[in-house]
Length: 113
Image (cartoon, rainbow, N blue to C red; front, side, top):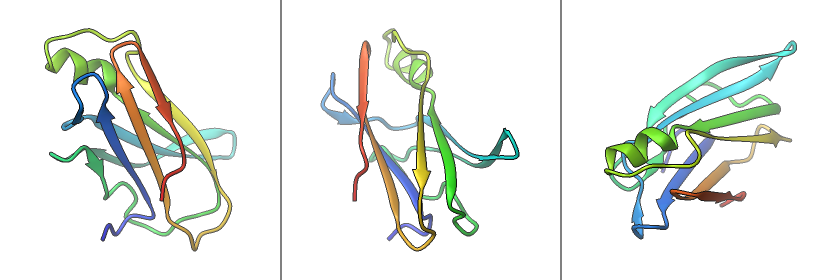
């Protein structure tokens, strides 16, 4: 079970495999600025499960995934050099899972469980 209240899972839909080794940055928006609150690389299963070590604060968060670096490491190119997903946290007592499906020319995301 992940200890972070915010997690992600990245699947490379072009290869049908988890996207391992993707750099993921977690930021919190406070006082009109973004503040880094976590950073991690996805594990062999494409998961980032230790993004936030401290307590969860309600507010606006942003996950940035370095997809261009990932696709270059796979010998390919990517239309999106990075993908940023901004989302709201309503309550501190929930788990927020933000999956990302990527291909070299597109992506999709949703709130997972």
